[in-house]
Length: 92
Image (cartoon, rainbow, N blue to C red):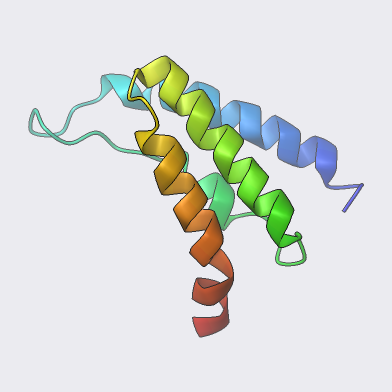
C-alpha cells in the first residue's frame, strides 16, 4: 500500500487536471460531457481499504466540483460509486 501511494497521488492529480482542462471543455451534441475522472476510483488496487476509497472519492468529486461549479453533484456521485465499488468488484 505504501509503495503505491505516490503513484496513486500522481494519478489523482493527473486525472483531475485532465478532467478540468480537457474534458470539461468537450461537449458531445451540446448536452453531454465526458467524465473520465471516475476511472480513478475504479482503477484503485483491490486491497485498498474501504475508508481510503471513500475519502479518495470525496476528494476527487470535491475537486472536480470546485472547478466545475456544480455544488456537490460530482462529490455525491463519486462517494456513492466508491461505496458501491466492493459490490461491483465482487460481481466481476
